[in-house]
Length: 194
Image 1 (cartoon, rainbow, N blue to C red):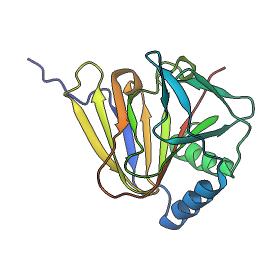
Image 2: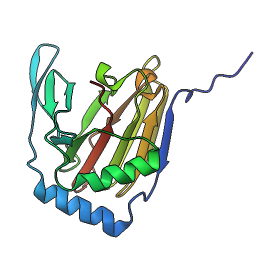
Image 3: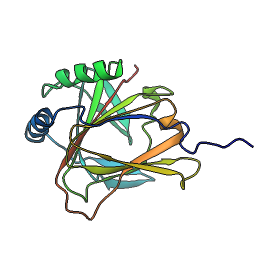
Image 4: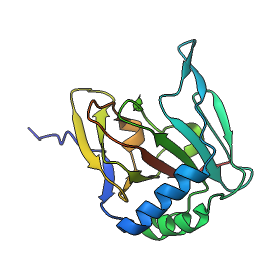
């Protein structure tokens, strides 16, 4: 009998300290103050819900990303994000054309279980997730067996790359926490196909 690796298909690379502390702090403060953060409304199972986080988007002008029934239109690489895109490109050997920015104001802001598996991302998308601000716990679970889980701490300046079958076979979440935590900004870079 052959042993099965329960983490098979979890194609990820965690790069702690991808941004040096002073660069991470600079980006956190610039984005926190400079972005016009919005709290979105969306429909899930026929019910209108309020997003449990604040969001914004940027990317190549004209690029549109649709999730949770809402289209998000990029108006260019605003807030100086072209510089970060170049850093991501060098680290991943890949060029994103869109970034979703998320602001988690405290431990009660969260994101439920989901996969970034929209058709516009292709069958095995690469997602580059940059964390700024407070350290938060990030969890994975297999879609076909929710008892198979994996967790990691994502800290200020950390980069998490997810590719391959990670979105098809796994879900991820940023759960709520009762710990007193300050704000966290997460940028998820992706390549949208037209």
